[in-house]
Amino acid sequence: MKLSVDIPFALLLFAFALSDPVTTNFVVYRTCYVTMGFNKSDCALLGTPEATDETAKLELKVQPHAAVLTTTKSVTEIVVTSIWCFFLGPWSDQYGRRPVMIMSLAG
View 1 (cartoon, one colour):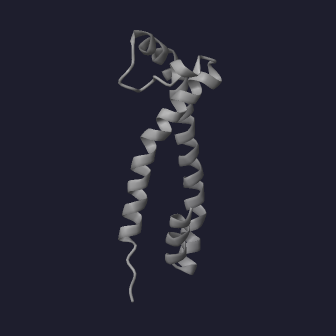
View 2 (cartoon, helix red, strand yellow):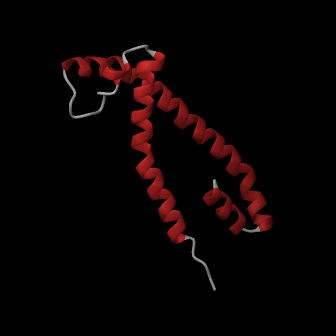
View 3 (cartoon, one colour):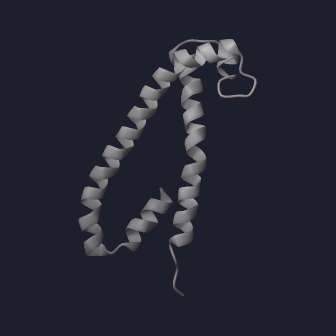
C-alpha cells in the first residue's frame, strides 16, 4: 500500500493557517496586561466587536509592542528553520525523504 503525504501536509498547513490569527491575538492580549500592566478586562476587549474609543486608544498603545514580539518570533522561527534545513538536506539525501516528512508531521 502506497501512502501519500499530500493530505497530511495539507492538514498541517490548514492547522497553521487557523492558529496564526489566534497566536497574534494572544500576543496582543498578553502584551496588554502582562508587559504594559493594563487591566485584564480592558485588554480582553481588544480585537472584539464590543470595542469602544478607549479600546481603540489602548490598541494604539499595545500594538507596537505586540508587533515587535510577533516579528521577533517570526524571525527566530525563520532563522532556526533555515539552519535546521541546512543540515537536514544532506542528511535526507543519505537516509531518504520519508523520515524528514514524518518528523515534520510529528512535531
